Image (cartoon, rainbow over all chains, first blue to last red; front, side):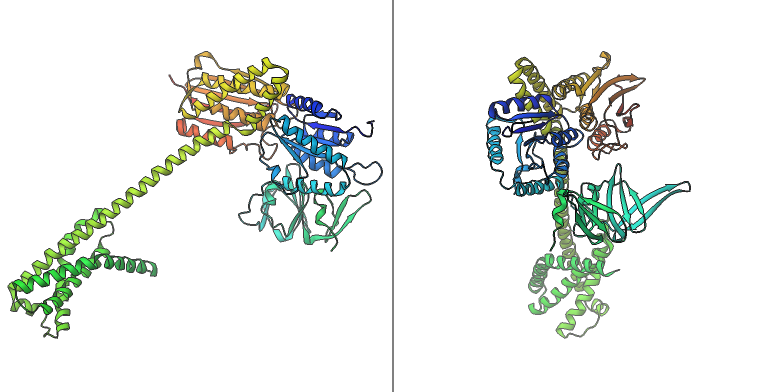
Length: 275
Length: 363
């Protein structure tokens, strides 16, 4: 186990030269920081971060398996914030070659970012900021909320402006008799759920499968009517009967009309507050 | 005729009235002055007749030509019928209007002709020459305006085509100098300088060669296959520094094919696709094989990767090849070789993607 005052960090970067260089620079600028692990893809970043519970995360944005942003979102969702042994969510630093997400442009700058090639002076600033943040963790909940907000914005990316809101879902199904296109009015849809290569479309009566990715679908849905509650789930707000939060801090939904229970990602649980 | 065409015709007539009013009034007044001076009579009466006849002739010619001449450049000869006819009809109408205005006995054209044959024929002849001259003047002015308009349109088209070509060239250059590739390479270079100066130098040399070739190729219209393979080698070596063991590659170019000409950066786009959509999303990475071969009179170029394949991920190219990189390659093949060139995309056996281009071979 770490000595209580030794800060730890996790580096996720798929180019090993860059991971080594960052580690070497950090060793000079912040000798007290211990690199708990250095991983090369987004999925390992999530598992290792959950295992090692570091104080700081350096995530490359473009990585195989999961992007740095997706990995951070998955980690935020799985992070234990309550109960014994709960640690504050790590401070996040994104490292990217090209700032297509305009990370710096966000109002709530909960997440720092570094542009590659990382310059020593710039890294020094980040280190100073991180040291101050670790020394002064008075309101971990507030800073976690700010991080969630920024991740949400990053994941939303640039929503493709909907040409026209979708009115009908066209779902095909095939059987021995041939294939059929079902015309499902959008008003009948209770929720959409991403499943492997398909998106499941649920109505009170039955389930359909479509191939349009959820991300693309989102752009064509009215955000007032359909709410994203999870990376892979978009639900009709009026179909939600109740929202429950268990002792572990997990939020889930009960729907009207069908017995399905949907779990709400922590990233989107801000949607549900009592009036 | 529906309401819209009537509206359009009315608008056209109004425009012409506006345009022709002054010359018509001037000519009518000149004729009235001339007649007063040489044929005698009261000037005010000559003015009334001259203007009624002139206006009637103008209107007759305008109406007839707008109905009967749709395409001026091909049907302008019809004016030889319209003008004399319009003058005669306009003259008769003008006489009638004039006599009505002056409260003269409206004897009708036939009676006037019988009473004063010489004067009437003279007046008709005078009107005919005035009408003809004015019509010629109006028509040539209109044609000049039309020619100017056509010139402006064709200039705009040329400009648009030029802009399109420049944009395509810029886009190509932009995909070659993709910021992620460039800055990641520079970041690796920066890292190497500290730990392995010799390798850093090597990497910098390759980057310089790659950039120089990219800039040159984006301006050239054709490029030798040998040069393209050299550039691919530079690019893949750069990528290997970055990806390490996650990237393996092999280039196979028979020496006798090195002189074959292809559109520049053609294979480059395919190899970048393989890296971006095939190998980079895979944690283990993979292998890229690039081959050129001769099959009869065809040059066959193949880029095969062992990456995640066609159906994984949202951004992977579709099997019809509608992904950005592929559609660009298709377009450029189409532009250089038309239907003689083909591009196919297939799932490679054992996973990954295989893209094949066939071109006619140069002798």
